[in-house]
Image (cartoon, rainbow, N blue to C red; front, side, top):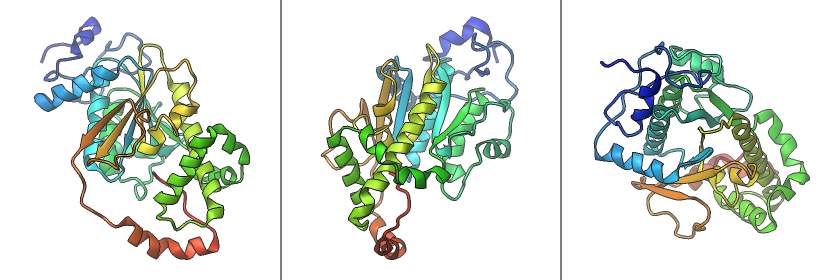
Length: 304
């Protein structure tokens, strides 16, 4: 294996069959020193080349928001590929996650840290977010010496957000109404009318929290990647609404199947379709678990 150091890392951007050069972000030069853990193997072939081209079409960017469908395995695989390619180019500043709360990170971990150490650092909730799905993308960043940051609103703050009417003013009026309507549809029309505004406030508070984390992690000449549900990545409603104007943000929608057909054309910079998923009646399950709660006027926090 050839020795990779110093300026040789600059030539890795399209070398899909080569090895990913790993270094901590503390070294501004990128690839000085040897990694402490196995370096990541980049895949090759037409699919990898296509992903490389997709990424090229979005760059340059300070922030890249990847909006997934949480139960689509292929979406998490794409996320890992994007993280791998950006790290290989020396462009990855950090990876921020909806799947972990703000205030936790892997910044103190070494590239050789274990998955158990990584889960502990992120206070990972495997019941809510299966590690088997997200672990590969997280560990790709850790192995590259790039910090992974929790970016979601902590659960302890959600109740206060529901009562904070000032959050209503954080979105333009039409966008706020759209957000509330999405809350209604996302909960299968089971929410009482009185809960739509409070639940939309949680979404807004989550988006603001994620935007703040992205702003703090931004580094000149590099890209912070956010992995989140597609609603959070939506330019018209989600995190991009709360980012500073001086940050160049690009939003990608990973869409399983053909979609609803009524998605605003300005919601995302790019839509990457993936195969459709089997039909599942989520509302049937939700009615069993949630209908009694809606009658009482309470509801679980949304996860678009």
